[in-house]
Length: 588
Ligand code: GAL
Image 1 (cartoon, rainbow, N blue to C red):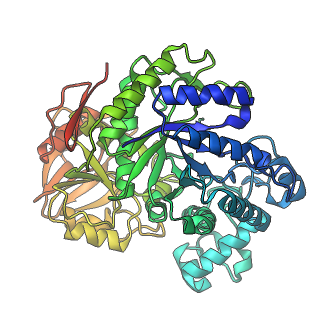
Image 2 (cartoon, rainbow, N blue to C red; image 1 turned 45 degrees about the horizontal axis):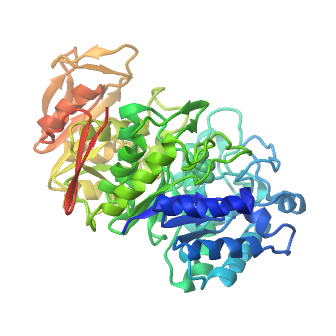
C-alpha cells in the first residue's frame, strides 16, 4: 500500500472544520498525515507549560477515521517566548546582523538553549504519543537547513575542526594559510566565514559547509535517539538545491526512510525534468532503503518571487513520476490551504475554494489511482551520474577562473539529456561502489578525494568525465602537475592551462561550445573532437571520455550516445519500469 496524504495543520482551523477534513480525507483515500510540524507555540504556549489537549483530540479523530499519523517535532520554529528568553539563540548573518523572531527557522542550531528546548519538546511528544495507535512514523523537525555565524557557532566550528585536523599545523596546511598572512597560532583565532574584505579562504569555506551539515545532523540525531525506542520509522525531510545545504549522502545513513520535498522552480516539461531529478536523487540517497515524496504542491507554488500553477493533470503526472521511480507514497504540503499567515497563497489539497474545485477533484482521483496500483517493487538503473556536495560547495565560491561555472547545472544537464531519451539514471557518491553500472558520468567533479579518485581508477565500465573534474583535493587545493590532477592517468591526457571562453566557439563536429575550454595534451588518449585551433576538445582513452568544454544539450547527448548511452524515448513520454509494471507518463 502506498502512503497518501500531506501536512495537516488543524490548529489553524476551528474544530468544525476538522470534522469536514475527516470526511474529505476519507473521500480522497488519504491514509497518512504529517501533524505538528510548526506547532511548538501551541504545544508549549509558555516555557514549561504544555497544552496537548488539542493534539490529543486530533490524534484520536484521525485514529477513529483510520488515518495514520506522521508526528513531527516542531523544532523548526521556536515560539516567540523562546526567542525573547534566549536572545543568544537567534541566528546571526555573516555580516553580523542578529535576526528577530517573526518568520520560521529563526534559531541557531549551536545555541545550548535551543538544543535543550528542542530535546525537551521531543521528549514530551515521545511521552505523550509514543504509544498512540494512530502513530506510524516520526518526522523530526522540518528541512534542516538554517545557518548562523554567531559565537556559539564559532565555538562549535573550532571543536569540529580540532576533531578533523588534530593539530593547528594540519589545519594551516589544509587551508593554505601561508597565503595572505592567515596562519593560525591558536584555535581561538578561527572564525566562521563571516563577511570579510575581499576573497575568503576556500578551504575555510568548504570546511564550514561540512561543519554546518554535521552540526545540523547532530541536532537531528539527538531527537531521533529520543524517539528511537518507539520502534517506529524516523525521518526528516530533505530538499535538493541550495535551500537545505547539507550533505544528504551522510544524512541518508541516519534516517530510516529518506523523505524529500519537491517544488520544481520551472513549468511544463522542465518541471517534470526537475521532479524526475529529485526522485532519482532520493532513490539514490536511500540506497535500497525506502523513500517517500513527503511534500509537493497541489497547485500554486511560490518560488523565487514567481507563482507557478499546476496545469490540469499535472498533480497526477508529477506524483506518478515519483511512484514510478520508487517512492513509497505521495504526500503534499499541505492538506488545507491556509487562510492567513506567511504562506497563505501556497496551494493545498483542499484549496481556498473548498472541495468543490478542480484541485480537490484531481486530489481525490489521484487517491483512487494510487489505491488501485499493485504492490510495487524496486527500480534499477545501469547508468549513474556522480553527485557530490563537496564538489558543489568547492565550485560555489568567488575567485574561480571563470564566472558562471555551475555545478548543479552541469549535473542537471547530464540527467536532463538522459531523461529526455528515456534513460533512467541513478546518482552515486564518488566513493560509492559503482562497479555495477555500465556507464558512469562525472560532471564537473571539481573537488575529489583520494579515495574517490582511486574508485574511478578501478572502475571498469565507460566513464564520461566533464570539464573541471579532478582538479582539487579534498581541501580545495589544486592537484599539481597538470589538470585534471587526479584523473590524468584514467583519461590519458594532461591539461596545461585553462582557457575560459569570452565568446562561444564552433568545434570540429559543428557543435557550439561556450564558457570554458582547456589546453589538452594527449597522453594515450585520441582527440575525437577539436577546437578551432586544432587542439583536442573531446578525447577518448579506451572507455574513458573527457569533455573539456561546456556543450549545449544536443551536443552533449551526442557525446553520451558515442559513449554508448542512448535511449529510445519519445519526447514528452516518460516510461519507467517498476516491477510489476511500466509507468507511462505523457507530459504535454
Ligand atoms: C517546504 C516546507 C513547507 C512549506 C513548503 C511550501 O519547503 O517544508 O513547510 O513551507 O515548503 O513553501
